[in-house]
Image (tube, protein in one colour):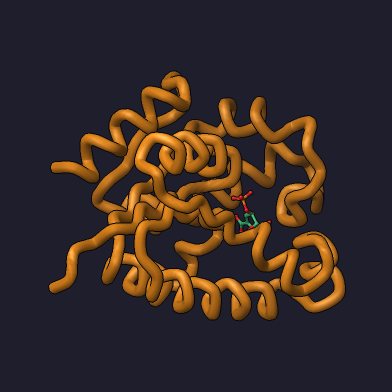
Length: 170
Ligand code: S3P
């Protein structure tokens, strides 16, 4: 099998995928790809508008198509959207060419990190703290099924990046 050169960051919203992705890209001289950013750019509208106007199902399809495209490339750091784990095919695709690492955090930490932000449609629909707990619990088995996981609740982003680099080189 060909060498795996990508690092794929999975995990719930607010677990630090984009921040850690930026650090990894700089340190390993790989290209950072933020899936939400690409999807929004290609659709010419925000993720929120895609959810509102086209529906979550359409967003998940765009996500799956982009996973297939990215898994065929090399030397990427991929910051995924938190719901990528909902489709097991996404994880299978990514695992062909990269190391998948799931960033974890407890719900209080997540709330603290995302509470001032308004761009995540799934968290704008009702009480944010409640939404985080509910969605996190429903997805927990999916995140816990990823063999490489790091709890970022009490760990600064540069330490998280360091751990991932160790995993990648191991
Ligand atoms: C989602 C997470 C978001 C974005 C969309 C749906 C999810 O990405 O893809 O709002 O289902 O968890 P982040 O994890 O980067 O916030």
